[in-house]
Image (tube, rainbow, N blue to C red):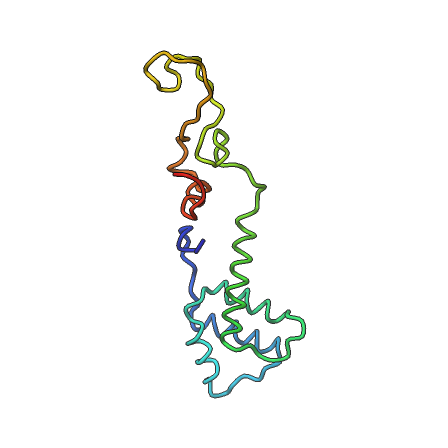
Length: 157
């Protein structure tokens, strides 16, 4: 699930905010800063599309990475930022214990175990013998778990 899919627009870093994170990472890893500013500019150009929070989380992980002795490449920082953001998002999504969205169908999209007495309970117009039956659950249009499973190709529509 992307941030766009859950309706959250991530705050992009300004150049000044990025340079503050860059400087903290330099200090933490004992990297001398480039007086000409070329290094900072190259890193800014490579990472400016990343959300500020992801850059901060990724830098924090790089600072604490056991055995790290060298300043990360832009690709390493990007990977660390992405991984940290995904980890944070997953932790935020699972703040409560799992529960079914729909108690009637347990997120399968089908209400099971209904009993017809032989009348019109099941929708058949003619008299018939008592039987068990199943119906599509009304939650299908709004149940996120059911819709996700359908998008991945699980189960019958």
